[in-house]
Amino acid sequence: MNQDIEKLLEKYYDGETTLEEEKDLRRFFLGGNVPVELKSHATQFGYFESAKEQQPSMGFNSKLAAKLDPPKSGPVRRFTSWVTRIAAGLALLLVGFGGGWIYFRMQPGSPEVAHILGDTSSEIKKVLAFEQMPVTSASDRIQAVNQSLEFGEGDREITQLLINTLNFDPNINVRLAACEALIYFENEPEVSEALIQSLGIQTDPNLQITLIEALVTLKEKRAVDQFQQIAANQDILDIVRLKAREGLGRLVTEEKSST
Amino acid sequence: MDLQAFNQRILPVQGRLFRMAMLFLRSRVEAEDAMQDVLLRLWTNREQLENYNSLEALAVKMIRNVCLDKLKSHNKQKMTHEELPDVQTGDASPYQQTEQADSNQLIHRLIGELPDQQKLVLHLRDVEEYSFEEIEEFTGLSINNIRVILSRARLKLRENYVKENDYESGY
Image 1 (cartoon, rainbow over the protein chains, first blue to last red):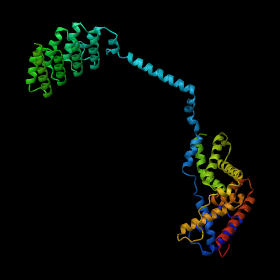
Image 2 (spheres, chains in turn red, purple; image 1 turned 90 degrees about the vertical axis):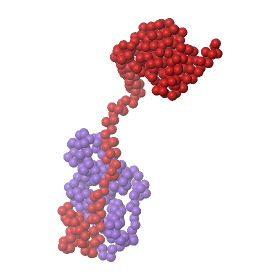
Image 3 (cartoon, chains in turn blue, yellow; image 1 turned 60 degrees about the vertical axis):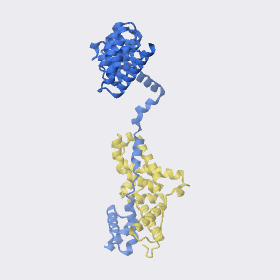
Image 4 (cartoon, helix red, strand yellow; image 1 turned 90 degrees about the horizontal axis):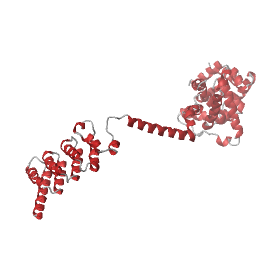
Protein backbone atom coordinates (compact mmCIF):
# COMPACT_ATOMS: atom_id res chain seq x y z
CA MET A 1 0.00 0.00 0.00
CA ASN A 2 2.63 2.47 1.09
CA GLN A 3 4.74 1.53 -1.90
CA ASP A 4 1.79 2.28 -4.15
CA ILE A 5 1.40 5.64 -2.54
CA GLU A 6 5.07 6.41 -2.88
CA LYS A 7 4.92 5.52 -6.54
CA LEU A 8 1.87 7.70 -6.97
CA LEU A 9 3.62 10.55 -5.17
CA GLU A 10 6.53 10.30 -7.52
CA LYS A 11 4.18 10.50 -10.48
CA TYR A 12 2.37 13.37 -8.78
CA TYR A 13 5.49 15.47 -8.42
CA ASP A 14 6.34 14.77 -12.04
CA GLY A 15 2.96 16.08 -13.08
CA GLU A 16 2.02 12.73 -14.57
CA THR A 17 -0.89 11.64 -12.36
CA THR A 18 -4.43 11.51 -13.67
CA LEU A 19 -7.30 13.19 -11.83
CA GLU A 20 -8.37 9.74 -10.63
CA GLU A 21 -4.95 9.02 -9.13
CA GLU A 22 -4.83 12.40 -7.50
CA LYS A 23 -8.17 11.64 -5.88
CA ASP A 24 -6.69 8.44 -4.47
CA LEU A 25 -3.75 10.39 -3.06
CA ARG A 26 -6.05 12.91 -1.50
CA ARG A 27 -8.23 10.22 0.03
CA PHE A 28 -5.17 8.52 1.47
CA PHE A 29 -3.64 11.62 3.00
CA LEU A 30 -6.90 12.89 4.44
CA GLY A 31 -7.74 9.44 5.77
CA GLY A 32 -5.88 9.84 9.05
CA ASN A 33 -3.63 6.77 9.27
CA VAL A 34 -0.72 8.25 7.38
CA PRO A 35 2.66 6.73 8.25
CA VAL A 36 5.14 9.12 9.83
CA GLU A 37 7.59 9.15 6.96
CA LEU A 38 4.84 10.38 4.59
CA LYS A 39 3.22 12.83 6.98
CA SER A 40 4.94 15.86 5.55
CA HIS A 41 3.09 15.33 2.27
CA ALA A 42 -0.29 15.41 3.93
CA THR A 43 -0.37 19.12 4.64
CA GLN A 44 -0.75 20.36 1.10
CA PHE A 45 -3.59 17.95 0.36
CA GLY A 46 -5.31 19.18 3.49
CA TYR A 47 -4.84 22.71 2.24
CA PHE A 48 -6.23 21.95 -1.22
CA GLU A 49 -9.29 20.43 0.36
CA SER A 50 -9.98 23.42 2.62
CA ALA A 51 -9.19 25.92 -0.13
CA LYS A 52 -12.08 24.48 -2.12
CA GLU A 53 -14.50 25.79 0.42
CA GLN A 54 -13.61 29.45 0.04
CA GLN A 55 -16.66 31.37 -1.10
CA PRO A 56 -17.47 34.99 -1.77
CA SER A 57 -19.10 36.73 1.17
CA MET A 58 -22.82 36.52 1.76
CA GLY A 59 -23.60 40.04 0.64
CA PHE A 60 -21.79 39.67 -2.68
CA ASN A 61 -24.64 38.22 -4.70
CA SER A 62 -27.22 40.74 -3.57
CA LYS A 63 -24.80 43.57 -4.32
CA LEU A 64 -24.12 42.05 -7.70
CA ALA A 65 -27.80 41.58 -8.46
CA ALA A 66 -28.38 45.25 -7.70
CA LYS A 67 -25.67 46.16 -10.20
CA LEU A 68 -26.78 43.76 -12.89
CA ASP A 69 -30.39 44.72 -12.75
CA PRO A 70 -30.62 48.51 -12.67
CA PRO A 71 -32.98 48.88 -15.70
CA LYS A 72 -35.93 48.03 -13.45
CA SER A 73 -35.64 51.39 -11.77
CA GLY A 74 -35.67 53.01 -15.22
CA PRO A 75 -39.32 54.08 -15.51
CA VAL A 76 -39.25 55.60 -12.04
CA ARG A 77 -36.03 57.43 -12.65
CA ARG A 78 -37.38 59.05 -15.79
CA PHE A 79 -39.80 60.84 -13.50
CA THR A 80 -37.02 62.91 -11.96
CA SER A 81 -37.04 65.52 -14.73
CA TRP A 82 -38.48 68.67 -13.22
CA VAL A 83 -40.89 69.27 -16.09
CA THR A 84 -42.60 65.95 -15.51
CA ARG A 85 -42.64 66.63 -11.79
CA ILE A 86 -44.52 69.88 -12.26
CA ALA A 87 -46.87 68.25 -14.74
CA ALA A 88 -47.56 65.45 -12.29
CA GLY A 89 -48.22 67.97 -9.54
CA LEU A 90 -50.66 69.90 -11.70
CA ALA A 91 -52.41 66.74 -12.75
CA LEU A 92 -52.86 65.72 -9.12
CA LEU A 93 -54.24 69.16 -8.28
CA LEU A 94 -56.71 68.97 -11.15
CA VAL A 95 -57.84 65.52 -10.11
CA GLY A 96 -58.32 66.79 -6.56
CA PHE A 97 -60.42 69.79 -7.57
CA GLY A 98 -62.38 67.78 -10.10
CA GLY A 99 -63.10 65.09 -7.55
CA GLY A 100 -64.28 67.66 -5.02
CA TRP A 101 -66.53 69.37 -7.56
CA ILE A 102 -68.13 66.10 -8.67
CA TYR A 103 -68.62 65.04 -5.06
CA PHE A 104 -70.32 68.35 -4.35
CA ARG A 105 -72.64 67.97 -7.30
CA MET A 106 -73.57 64.43 -6.43
CA GLN A 107 -75.43 65.41 -3.24
CA PRO A 108 -78.75 66.94 -4.20
CA GLY A 109 -80.71 65.76 -1.15
CA SER A 110 -79.18 67.61 1.74
CA PRO A 111 -79.81 71.32 1.98
CA GLU A 112 -76.54 73.10 1.53
CA VAL A 113 -75.17 75.67 3.88
CA ALA A 114 -74.07 77.79 0.97
CA HIS A 115 -77.65 77.81 -0.18
CA ILE A 116 -78.95 79.12 3.09
CA LEU A 117 -76.30 81.80 3.28
CA GLY A 118 -77.36 83.33 0.03
CA ASP A 119 -81.08 82.92 0.50
CA THR A 120 -84.03 84.42 2.26
CA SER A 121 -85.92 83.44 5.34
CA SER A 122 -87.98 80.96 3.36
CA GLU A 123 -84.96 78.69 3.31
CA ILE A 124 -84.64 78.92 7.05
CA LYS A 125 -88.26 77.99 7.40
CA LYS A 126 -87.76 75.04 5.12
CA VAL A 127 -84.95 73.67 7.23
CA LEU A 128 -86.57 74.30 10.58
CA ALA A 129 -90.01 73.06 9.53
CA PHE A 130 -91.11 70.25 11.78
CA GLU A 131 -91.69 67.75 8.98
CA GLN A 132 -88.11 68.24 7.77
CA MET A 133 -86.57 67.13 11.03
CA PRO A 134 -85.66 63.55 10.01
CA VAL A 135 -84.07 64.75 6.76
CA THR A 136 -81.91 67.60 7.99
CA SER A 137 -78.83 67.23 10.14
CA ALA A 138 -78.41 68.90 13.54
CA SER A 139 -75.67 71.16 12.29
CA ASP A 140 -77.86 72.27 9.38
CA ARG A 141 -80.57 73.24 11.82
CA ILE A 142 -78.14 75.09 14.08
CA GLN A 143 -76.94 76.98 10.99
CA ALA A 144 -80.51 77.86 10.16
CA VAL A 145 -81.17 79.03 13.71
CA ASN A 146 -78.10 81.25 13.63
CA GLN A 147 -79.14 82.51 10.25
CA SER A 148 -82.53 83.46 11.61
CA LEU A 149 -80.84 86.03 13.84
CA GLU A 150 -80.05 88.07 10.74
CA PHE A 151 -83.25 87.67 8.80
CA GLY A 152 -85.85 86.69 11.33
CA GLU A 153 -86.44 89.96 13.15
CA GLY A 154 -90.10 90.81 13.01
CA ASP A 155 -90.99 87.63 11.22
CA ARG A 156 -93.53 85.98 13.48
CA GLU A 157 -93.48 82.82 11.50
CA ILE A 158 -89.79 82.38 12.19
CA THR A 159 -90.26 83.16 15.87
CA GLN A 160 -92.91 80.47 15.98
CA LEU A 161 -90.57 78.04 14.27
CA LEU A 162 -87.85 78.82 16.76
CA ILE A 163 -90.24 78.17 19.64
CA ASN A 164 -91.19 74.86 18.07
CA THR A 165 -87.53 74.01 17.68
CA LEU A 166 -86.86 74.96 21.28
CA ASN A 167 -89.58 72.65 22.50
CA PHE A 168 -89.40 69.69 20.17
CA ASP A 169 -86.03 69.38 18.49
CA PRO A 170 -84.46 66.04 19.41
CA ASN A 171 -80.97 67.52 19.56
CA ILE A 172 -80.03 69.43 22.74
CA ASN A 173 -77.59 71.67 20.92
CA VAL A 174 -80.21 72.78 18.44
CA ARG A 175 -82.58 73.52 21.29
CA LEU A 176 -79.90 75.56 23.06
CA ALA A 177 -79.22 77.51 19.88
CA ALA A 178 -82.93 78.15 19.43
CA CYS A 179 -83.16 79.33 23.04
CA GLU A 180 -80.31 81.77 22.57
CA ALA A 181 -81.84 82.99 19.31
CA LEU A 182 -85.17 83.61 21.00
CA ILE A 183 -83.52 85.78 23.67
CA TYR A 184 -82.58 88.17 20.87
CA PHE A 185 -86.23 88.50 19.93
CA GLU A 186 -87.29 89.45 23.44
CA ASN A 187 -89.38 92.35 22.25
CA GLU A 188 -91.73 90.08 20.42
CA PRO A 189 -94.71 89.43 22.68
CA GLU A 190 -94.92 85.69 22.55
CA VAL A 191 -91.22 85.05 23.21
CA SER A 192 -91.15 85.40 27.00
CA GLU A 193 -94.41 83.49 27.25
CA ALA A 194 -92.86 80.68 25.22
CA LEU A 195 -89.73 80.64 27.39
CA ILE A 196 -91.78 80.27 30.56
CA GLN A 197 -93.79 77.51 28.97
CA SER A 198 -90.68 75.77 27.75
CA LEU A 199 -89.16 75.86 31.22
CA GLY A 200 -92.03 73.65 32.31
CA ILE A 201 -91.37 71.17 29.52
CA GLN A 202 -87.58 70.94 29.36
CA THR A 203 -85.85 68.18 31.33
CA ASP A 204 -82.25 68.83 30.34
CA PRO A 205 -80.49 70.69 33.18
CA ASN A 206 -78.29 72.59 30.77
CA LEU A 207 -81.25 74.00 28.94
CA GLN A 208 -83.16 74.61 32.16
CA ILE A 209 -80.32 76.74 33.48
CA THR A 210 -80.07 78.65 30.21
CA LEU A 211 -83.79 79.33 30.31
CA ILE A 212 -83.68 80.49 33.93
CA GLU A 213 -80.81 82.85 33.17
CA ALA A 214 -82.65 84.14 30.11
CA LEU A 215 -85.82 84.84 32.06
CA VAL A 216 -83.86 86.61 34.81
CA THR A 217 -82.11 88.88 32.34
CA LEU A 218 -85.48 89.58 30.68
CA LYS A 219 -86.79 90.46 34.16
CA GLU A 220 -89.86 88.38 33.40
CA LYS A 221 -91.92 88.45 36.57
CA ARG A 222 -94.44 86.02 35.19
CA ALA A 223 -91.78 83.33 35.57
CA VAL A 224 -91.89 83.52 39.37
CA ASP A 225 -94.48 80.76 39.64
CA GLN A 226 -92.51 78.49 37.36
CA PHE A 227 -89.31 79.17 39.34
CA GLN A 228 -91.02 78.28 42.58
CA GLN A 229 -92.25 75.02 41.11
CA ILE A 230 -88.73 74.08 40.00
CA ALA A 231 -87.20 75.07 43.33
CA ALA A 232 -89.70 72.83 45.10
CA ASN A 233 -89.40 69.84 42.72
CA GLN A 234 -87.23 67.14 44.28
CA ASP A 235 -86.81 65.32 40.94
CA ILE A 236 -84.89 68.16 39.40
CA LEU A 237 -81.12 68.37 39.64
CA ASP A 238 -79.87 70.32 42.70
CA ILE A 239 -77.88 72.81 40.68
CA VAL A 240 -80.95 73.70 38.62
CA ARG A 241 -83.05 74.20 41.73
CA LEU A 242 -80.33 76.37 43.22
CA LYS A 243 -80.32 78.41 40.05
CA ALA A 244 -84.10 78.75 40.15
CA ARG A 245 -84.00 79.90 43.79
CA GLU A 246 -81.28 82.40 42.95
CA GLY A 247 -83.26 83.67 39.96
CA LEU A 248 -86.35 83.89 42.13
CA GLY A 249 -84.47 86.00 44.64
CA ARG A 250 -83.22 88.36 41.98
CA LEU A 251 -86.62 88.77 40.38
CA VAL A 252 -88.21 89.50 43.75
CA THR A 253 -85.59 92.03 44.85
CA GLU A 254 -85.81 93.79 41.51
CA GLU A 255 -89.55 93.95 41.88
CA LYS A 256 -89.13 95.51 45.31
CA SER A 257 -86.52 98.02 44.18
CA SER A 258 -88.65 99.07 41.21
CA THR A 259 -91.66 99.72 43.38
CA MET B 1 -30.62 35.83 -21.77
CA ASP B 2 -32.46 37.18 -18.76
CA LEU B 3 -31.02 37.65 -15.31
CA GLN B 4 -32.35 34.37 -14.04
CA ALA B 5 -30.78 32.36 -16.81
CA PHE B 6 -27.56 34.30 -16.39
CA ASN B 7 -27.48 33.59 -12.67
CA GLN B 8 -28.22 29.95 -13.31
CA ARG B 9 -25.18 29.65 -15.49
CA ILE B 10 -22.85 31.83 -13.46
CA LEU B 11 -23.69 30.78 -9.88
CA PRO B 12 -21.99 27.38 -10.03
CA VAL B 13 -18.83 29.02 -11.34
CA GLN B 14 -18.80 31.85 -8.81
CA GLY B 15 -16.91 30.00 -6.10
CA ARG B 16 -14.21 29.03 -8.54
CA LEU B 17 -13.85 32.54 -9.88
CA PHE B 18 -13.62 33.88 -6.37
CA ARG B 19 -10.88 31.41 -5.42
CA MET B 20 -8.99 32.27 -8.59
CA ALA B 21 -9.14 35.93 -7.72
CA MET B 22 -8.07 35.21 -4.16
CA LEU B 23 -5.13 33.25 -5.52
CA PHE B 24 -3.77 36.31 -7.28
CA LEU B 25 -5.01 39.21 -5.20
CA ARG B 26 -4.97 37.57 -1.78
CA SER B 27 -7.53 39.99 -0.42
CA ARG B 28 -11.21 39.23 -0.05
CA VAL B 29 -12.30 42.76 -0.91
CA GLU B 30 -10.19 42.96 -4.03
CA ALA B 31 -11.13 39.48 -5.10
CA GLU B 32 -14.81 40.31 -4.89
CA ASP B 33 -14.12 43.51 -6.75
CA ALA B 34 -12.44 41.65 -9.58
CA MET B 35 -15.20 39.11 -9.67
CA GLN B 36 -17.85 41.78 -9.87
CA ASP B 37 -15.90 43.34 -12.70
CA VAL B 38 -15.91 40.10 -14.66
CA LEU B 39 -19.56 39.30 -14.00
CA LEU B 40 -20.61 42.79 -15.03
CA ARG B 41 -18.69 42.49 -18.26
CA LEU B 42 -20.25 39.11 -18.95
CA TRP B 43 -23.69 40.54 -18.24
CA THR B 44 -23.29 43.51 -20.54
CA ASN B 45 -22.15 41.18 -23.32
CA ARG B 46 -24.78 38.60 -22.55
CA GLU B 47 -26.10 38.63 -26.13
CA GLN B 48 -22.86 37.17 -27.40
CA LEU B 49 -22.52 34.61 -24.64
CA GLU B 50 -24.57 32.11 -26.64
CA ASN B 51 -21.67 31.88 -29.08
CA TYR B 52 -19.28 30.55 -26.47
CA ASN B 53 -19.56 26.89 -25.74
CA SER B 54 -18.14 27.25 -22.25
CA LEU B 55 -19.07 30.22 -20.17
CA GLU B 56 -16.83 28.86 -17.45
CA ALA B 57 -13.72 28.90 -19.62
CA LEU B 58 -14.47 32.44 -20.70
CA ALA B 59 -15.02 33.59 -17.14
CA VAL B 60 -11.84 31.92 -15.89
CA LYS B 61 -9.84 33.55 -18.66
CA MET B 62 -11.38 36.91 -17.89
CA ILE B 63 -10.81 36.73 -14.18
CA ARG B 64 -7.19 35.79 -14.74
CA ASN B 65 -6.68 38.78 -16.97
CA VAL B 66 -8.47 41.14 -14.64
CA CYS B 67 -6.39 39.95 -11.72
CA LEU B 68 -3.12 40.23 -13.60
CA ASP B 69 -4.09 43.72 -14.76
CA LYS B 70 -4.90 44.73 -11.22
CA LEU B 71 -1.57 43.36 -10.00
CA LYS B 72 0.28 45.21 -12.72
CA SER B 73 -1.47 48.49 -11.97
CA HIS B 74 -0.48 48.48 -8.32
CA ASN B 75 2.47 46.21 -8.26
CA LYS B 76 4.23 48.22 -5.62
CA GLN B 77 1.36 48.05 -3.20
CA LYS B 78 1.02 44.34 -3.69
CA MET B 79 3.16 43.35 -0.78
CA THR B 80 1.66 45.77 1.70
CA HIS B 81 -1.87 44.94 0.62
CA GLU B 82 -1.38 41.26 1.06
CA GLU B 83 -3.65 39.90 3.71
CA LEU B 84 -1.18 38.00 5.77
CA PRO B 85 -2.90 35.38 7.79
CA ASP B 86 -2.16 35.97 11.43
CA VAL B 87 0.68 33.52 11.68
CA GLN B 88 1.31 31.89 15.00
CA THR B 89 4.01 29.53 13.86
CA GLY B 90 6.43 27.77 16.12
CA ASP B 91 4.66 26.91 19.31
CA ALA B 92 3.01 23.58 18.66
CA SER B 93 -0.67 23.96 19.33
CA PRO B 94 -2.17 21.24 21.48
CA TYR B 95 -5.03 20.89 19.08
CA GLN B 96 -4.61 19.19 15.77
CA GLN B 97 -7.18 21.48 14.23
CA THR B 98 -5.20 24.60 14.90
CA GLU B 99 -2.12 22.79 13.77
CA GLN B 100 -3.79 22.04 10.48
CA ALA B 101 -4.98 25.63 10.26
CA ASP B 102 -1.45 26.89 10.87
CA SER B 103 0.05 24.68 8.21
CA ASN B 104 -2.78 25.66 5.86
CA GLN B 105 -1.72 29.23 6.29
CA LEU B 106 1.85 28.28 5.60
CA ILE B 107 0.92 26.46 2.39
CA HIS B 108 -1.28 29.38 1.41
CA ARG B 109 1.65 31.72 1.78
CA LEU B 110 4.05 29.41 -0.06
CA ILE B 111 1.66 29.07 -3.00
CA GLY B 112 1.41 32.83 -3.06
CA GLU B 113 5.16 33.05 -3.44
CA LEU B 114 5.22 30.84 -6.54
CA PRO B 115 5.55 32.49 -9.98
CA ASP B 116 2.14 33.45 -11.41
CA GLN B 117 2.03 30.72 -14.01
CA GLN B 118 2.97 27.93 -11.61
CA LYS B 119 0.55 29.29 -9.07
CA LEU B 120 -2.29 29.29 -11.58
CA VAL B 121 -1.69 25.82 -12.96
CA LEU B 122 -1.25 24.33 -9.51
CA HIS B 123 -4.44 25.97 -8.32
CA LEU B 124 -6.46 24.89 -11.34
CA ARG B 125 -5.28 21.32 -11.04
CA ASP B 126 -4.99 20.64 -7.34
CA VAL B 127 -7.70 22.84 -5.89
CA GLU B 128 -10.25 23.03 -8.68
CA GLU B 129 -9.41 19.62 -10.16
CA TYR B 130 -9.66 20.63 -13.80
CA SER B 131 -8.51 18.20 -16.45
CA PHE B 132 -5.41 19.02 -18.51
CA GLU B 133 -7.66 19.70 -21.50
CA GLU B 134 -9.60 22.28 -19.55
CA ILE B 135 -6.46 23.93 -18.24
CA GLU B 136 -5.19 24.02 -21.81
CA GLU B 137 -8.35 25.85 -22.82
CA PHE B 138 -8.14 28.36 -19.95
CA THR B 139 -4.46 29.20 -20.23
CA GLY B 140 -3.62 28.58 -23.86
CA LEU B 141 -0.64 26.48 -22.82
CA SER B 142 0.04 23.08 -24.38
CA ILE B 143 -0.64 20.01 -22.29
CA ASN B 144 3.03 19.07 -22.16
CA ASN B 145 3.89 22.54 -21.03
CA ILE B 146 1.22 22.33 -18.37
CA ARG B 147 2.66 19.08 -17.05
CA VAL B 148 6.09 20.62 -16.78
CA ILE B 149 4.82 23.74 -15.03
CA LEU B 150 2.67 21.66 -12.70
CA SER B 151 5.60 19.41 -11.80
CA ARG B 152 7.78 22.41 -11.08
CA ALA B 153 5.10 24.04 -8.97
CA ARG B 154 4.49 20.91 -6.90
CA LEU B 155 8.19 20.31 -6.35
CA LYS B 156 8.83 23.93 -5.47
CA LEU B 157 5.96 24.01 -3.01
CA ARG B 158 7.19 20.80 -1.44
CA GLU B 159 10.76 22.06 -1.24
CA ASN B 160 9.79 25.32 0.39
CA TYR B 161 7.44 23.61 2.78
CA VAL B 162 10.12 21.19 3.94
CA LYS B 163 12.56 24.07 4.29
CA GLU B 164 10.11 26.00 6.43
CA ASN B 165 9.17 23.09 8.57
CA ASP B 166 12.72 21.87 8.94
CA TYR B 167 11.80 18.26 8.54
CA GLU B 168 14.72 15.90 9.03
CA SER B 169 13.68 13.51 6.31
CA GLY B 170 13.08 15.37 3.08
CA TYR B 171 11.07 13.97 0.24
